Amino acid sequence: MTLANLQSYGKEFQRKVLGALLTDKIFLQNVRDVLKEDLFDNSADKWIVQVMLRYYQDYHCCISMSALKTELQKCENEVLRVAVKEELKAAYEASTEDQEYVKEEFTMFCRNQEMKQAILDSTDLLKNGDFEGIRARVDRALKAGLDKNIGHEYKKDIETRYREDYRPTIPTPWEPINLTYEGGLGPGDLFLIFGGPGAGKSWLCMAIAAHAVELGYNVNYYSLELGESYVSRRIDSYLTGYSVKDCEEHRDEVERLVGELKGNLIVKEYAPFSATMSTIEAHIQKCTDEGFKPDLVVIDYLDYIKPASHRRYGDRQEEIDDAYIGGKRLAKMLGIPVVSPSQVNRSGAKDDVVEGDKAAGSYNKLAVADGSISLSRKKEDKVLGTARIHIMKSRYGGDGTTYNVKMDANNGHVTFEGEMTVEETQEVKTEIGNFNIDKKTLTEFFNPKK
Image 1 (cartoon, rainbow, N blue to C red):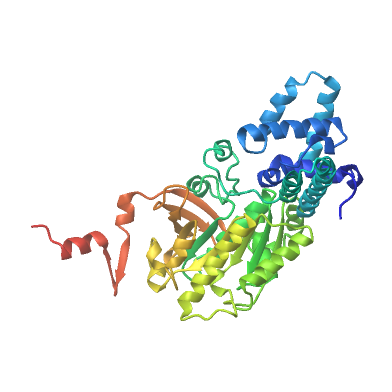
Image 2 (cartoon, rainbow, N blue to C red; image 1 turned 60 degrees about the horizontal axis):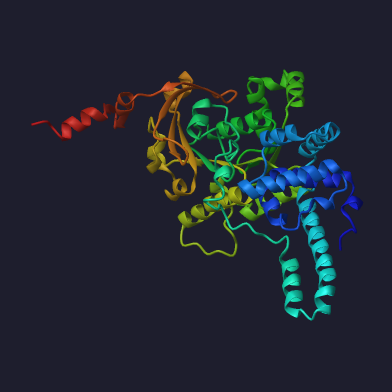
């Protein structure tokens, strides 16, 4: 059941509908065949619907702000032009709360209107004995508003793939990483941070989460190691620059900075191997139902996700593979980035630069990930406050680069100091017994020049 007309839903509902039509291509694509300007009683709304439908017909995507501005300049009616400006502003700023309900209800309303019209049209067809015409008209009404998204249509969707926001990203705190990944972490990305025990992987995850909240994004942080309060204190530490211990003495400053944050953060703790991916999905849905829809999810970490009870695994590697595939599936399903730290094996923990072959548990982690970096921080690094970050994999740019960084383990701050040269990378020391022999010397020893 739907209401008799669109006006009965109220102005706020109509503005949410317009906001979705202006920004959600799939929604516009699905209702385009039943979307008529006459459904709206406001002349400004009618103008917006007319223009967006014409634009979609030509370019197969939602109309851009710049195109709307140009079209509006062509409008000779000064009163209408002012009204459209106000209506567009209200539509773009309309709350996204209950957005799925609004889209579903509007689609059903349009389908009902189409069916009513089909029944009225069938009266004249019945008089003429045109039964096939009645059938065709009713079939068309039944198909109205159904999912029409068949994927990216290569010829039609040129405008879509060359829009500046074709891959809206959430920047990390580090510009070299953002440059490598074309702006940062994008929708559907699984981003992994590799490192040895105690290297600081969780600090990097917390830095990414805190930076996103500073920029105005909502973040869900799932901790399967540390407690909720301690994770939150660490994030306080990152935001203020004080150590976790010193934050207690500067609580007033912590409260002030937290109160000024544009975004929000939920930290949820689970014991290791107590939460499945379905548990995470259910919690995210619960948060969304409460009005908190995450833009970024951090799972610290995927190796501790409990295997699905209905699956039988041959070994631990299969369990790990399934957990990481589940993380990727979650990212794609929600259309947001998912970040997780990941362990390297024993030999990798001793390396100055951690390569992809040192992933612990399963090498398939790298195959699933869209982006991955490694953090190498040995004993001497912990004393000197140094480390190396290596770009292991990037689907969006060049990988294989290694950076020297400064890392403060008291607050998680990381500063990129510069890119390591090829020569510096090749001269990395390999520890054998009690001797430190560089790779160049080993190569010359086993492969002497003739």
